[in-house]
Image (cartoon, rainbow, N blue to C red; front, side, top):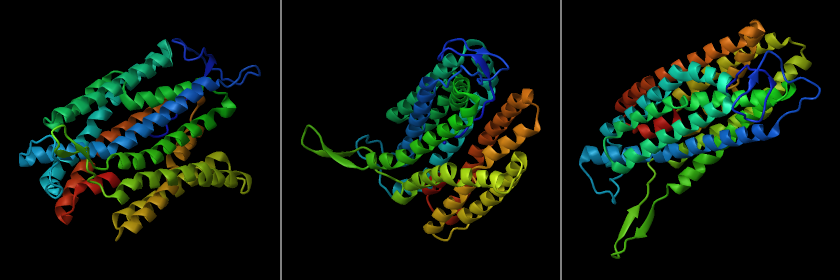
Length: 382
């Protein structure tokens, strides 16, 4: 899923998304400098549509993988008739689907980890636009490869090769980093934090709006064939409607947290209680970790689906940890080391993502076998 990225870069001159951007140690605080709204607006729009596309396709991609795995497992090769609903809940089929997503997450993170430094240097030397465009091309080719494998209905594990296309541009990690670089270059120092905030805001809006549309488009329809017979085409949803709408519910909660609750809490601690910014960040980081731990406990031991929603509400209140922690770290290092520290944080984030895929796959596989329930709902929630 797309998250906030912080890139500490400053400029002394910038043509609009030119192939060369001159970098220096100065900041855009000159009295004659202005915020360049056109590149900022374009980046916000790109982040919105990327989040919208990714979140809107998760349920349908899960369905496609499940259909292919079900046909291969039970030997049902008719491309016009979908597999039986109950048959596709077979643990062997669900294990295959879970394995696909778990290892795909792992492989997708490798290009960003390997190529991040190269494309970062390229962005400094050649400009942000070439890196941004290369990243979009690589992601488009990767998505096209997955669709090709699904259309051919061959072994779905071939979709793992889509990650190799992310070597072109570094994938989503480099895309978001380049986007944050452009926001940094195009905005005044006084507006920079707001530019990052609104970037995350439009991302959350995209995540909130996409799943309901995806669920609507996945409704089964009967289309008559030319010979007069009718075939049920399209995709039948394998995900419960409530589980599908969890995406939107979580995104809406995050939007409220980032837009209202966390900013008010941040301002109150500084203005009313007189805490120093770094002390405030330390306290809020600790509080966020405690809230996240409580939310994970609620989600893990939820006796009913209603408690899952409660756990998500609590979880959203702790999602400000990254922002508070990054702010705290930046106040503890010299200004000329912030870029290095943030790069190290990005590498650790990527390594965590690489480990999360196989670990989640193993946990979901064990859970499915232990409780005898399908993994598609669990995969959606996780």
